[in-house]
Amino acid sequence: MIDVKEMLAEAIKNEASDVHVNIEMPPIMRINTELSPMDFPVMDEKGIMLMLEAMVGPDKVTGFLEKRDLDFSTKIDDGSRFRVNARFQRESPAISFRVISNNIPSLEGLHLPQIVNDLIDLPRGLVLVTGHTGSGKSTTLASMVNAINCKYSKRIITLEDPIEYALENDKCMIEQREIGSDCMDFASGLKHVLRQDPDIILVGEMRDLETTSSTITGAETGHLVFSTLHTTNASQTVERIIDIYPAAQQNQIRAMLANTLQAVISQTLFKRIDQPGMIPCTEILLCNSAVRNCIREGRSFELPNIIETSKQIGMQMMDHSIADNYFKGYIDREEAIARSSNPSKMEKILTEEGKTTHRSAAVATASATSSKATAKEEPAKPEKSGLFGKKK
Image (cartoon, rainbow, N blue to C red; front, side, top):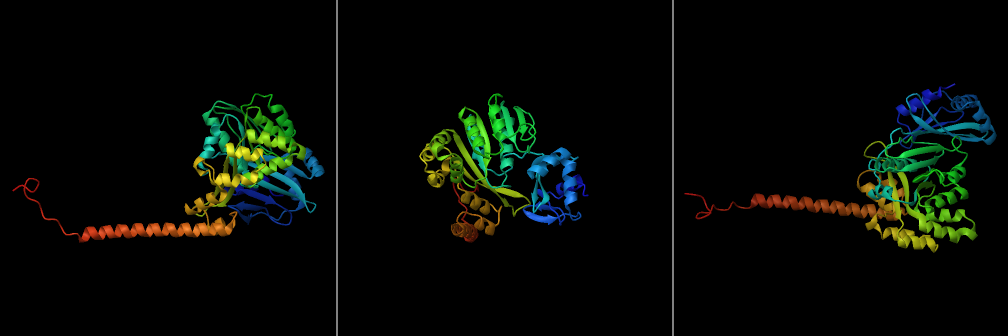
């Protein structure tokens, strides 16, 4: 049997983000989006079940065999922590580990727009961070909460499945509740959280109708609430929330959402080409009066146009963020084009702006060269005599 702690320590040594364990192959780790086999023996079903039991104990293994899925967190001797999912595939067990950094990065270190830093000053309302799995949503939320922790004296309660970043009390008093061990589920935790005197509530994920409803209610009652959704842009986020509700309740929830939503940060990660690591590209929606009217009246399809015309207040489209990171030299041109919402338009933008930049640089170089040549060829002026000339 493979020692799970030894395997995870090797992943940390190689700066992997994930480790996957399946039968009939060695453990696989992901490093900067690329999968790579680890130097361990091929796994079998018995070895995977023993690995699982070593982490959670026999009681939870029994529950896993009944429910066929299990989410939990674990750590190794050096303090490194992991989010873990165990499940069955083709009637065989499999385990995935996600590395959880012990160091919470600053918002500036994440290369997020400045407007994201401004959102921590909000007194109330709902702020959503959205994106596909592995897009850095948890890291962004942890960085925002930690920034509040360093700036304000507040009471923060989080509901997470599982707890990823361990937040230390600084100026804030923080309670972190893990689903399954500290409370039964998100709905149960949210039902009681309003009686616990929170200023700020973090909900790990708006998964279902009951959780979504309780999250919006928390924002409606005057709290600042952070949460996540698996959506890729602002308009899709609004539509997803509305569609969770039965048709008879959708007009009511549009009004509630229009009143409580403050911002949507949609993000995805790109592999950096200037150095090892990843960088986020983001779409930012800020809820001004025009946005609130669109949500209230069911015109979420107009939100991209509002974002496009509101750059001066900090909104931005995902494609603009992608183009900006490309021109800064952070991401690859082919990936920027392939992952944009309109690849042909993105290719044109990158080509035309690239030519403009090249022309500007050429003109500047030519101008500088011309100035030097003129200065070199200009004849020396004769020395003046008289009042301002040389003394005799």
